[in-house]
Length: 321
Length: 313
Image 1: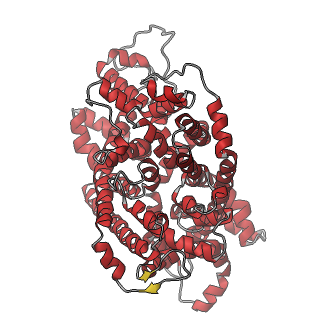
Image 2: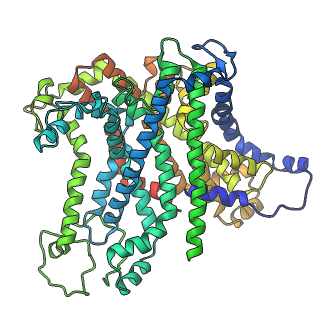
Image 3: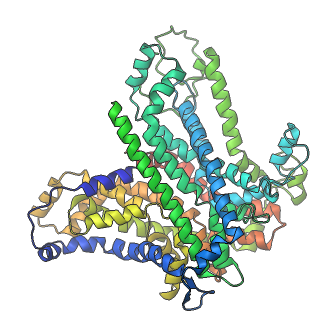
């Protein structure tokens, strides 16, 4: 979020010097463009080109790695609209997002508040333990959890033991629970980093605010709802944005954990794209690109909506102080 | 609540043991409010602390279970229920995973690809961040606009054109191809972190150096880059985590070239080929996870500060 902030300050820029000729400025600043060269070339080739090319590919019939495809207009999009599996994947991604993001953001806030208390001992150690899964490799965690969530694995055994389950269950191999298992593991893995975001946010609230509330006789709950939370709203928006984008990038975990199965019950959009483009016997690059384009539009739509929300929240809190 | 000693060091709360037995009056507490003694006197805090400890244990249980499973025999993993201690540790699981799967090769691939990606991103972001942070030039607003639009671009969106491009320049089954795929595009946050930092440095730095006759590149390499070490450390850590753990791109790039697989990708192949060797699988997972976890535990404060710093500023 600092990065976004920086970009705004940068582009605000200073007042332009009196119009010197464009050509002369370019010649004088040649070294600036030399500094930018690696970024311009790399970014152009690996980010901007794919952004544009995906749109072009989406209009092609392009089987496998044939040299190029043939233009077929919007046929891919028409096929997508009628493809039950695409909408299934779309729905799964959406459900994942709706369940996982509030859980991750909310639980992380709770943890951060508890770990921000002066009276909690071993804060550093606890923070480290909660953060540990964040640094691990998602693809490997996915594999490990196929064992942990197996019918004979410890989670099923423990749940039967305390009476939460009647009989052992393999959570990743059941159509009812495979997506939920993915949500749970994802929240487990990434909670620590959101907790750190929240801790950083909480530390921006000056201690005096807390003291003033104490002096005025505010109960902890009142202090939280009336003072802390309003101050945290801008952070809430940006943290939700970061986590939402994260929830749309779960290929490594889901692919290694469930592979999208059983019978597509946990196939998220990325797995759909991967399967169509690289996994099928006859790869369909054009068709997969069309799905990818829709996926990109969805992600950016969410990002823009939240950026607008952030601006709104800033203004609202700015008006208050 | 008069204790507002701004404590930042909070790890060493273990002042139990040899309690001095000194009684303290309310309002005149000792400097360390984090001590366990506080808990004894405050049931509410004790409950919260107990809850946190239980939750933390649940959080690391998968890793403890994994260590245990990697040392068990095949039937023992699922036969012994919740028991964590293996009857006799089977170290052979590790050697089997290492040799059968060829992990040494995957490990080396991961090191090369991560090292190359980190170097590429640090160099290109520092160079771009320097001029973006300190100079005005034609096209600057356009560049920043493009950065913002592509800030959250998902990997699944760009993967098909990236593969096609890499294939066309003939780098599809090479380390360099993977490194470029991971590091050449994206990673806007690193550039903006550098830009924000360089922007805050005083103008006099360059003016003095220029009077001494230093050119733009000398100033950057000798003065600016060393000053930006805190940002460089942050970028290295964040990029390391990204490159070591990334899965989709190396998977797609190595579909036809197993020798180029990274640890993350090799692991999934292991399941496909040895799907019933659970203990070997657990050992292989340990081998893959230990390096990144070890680095994290050694540098944990730096990790956490980097992430908090990158967010806060």
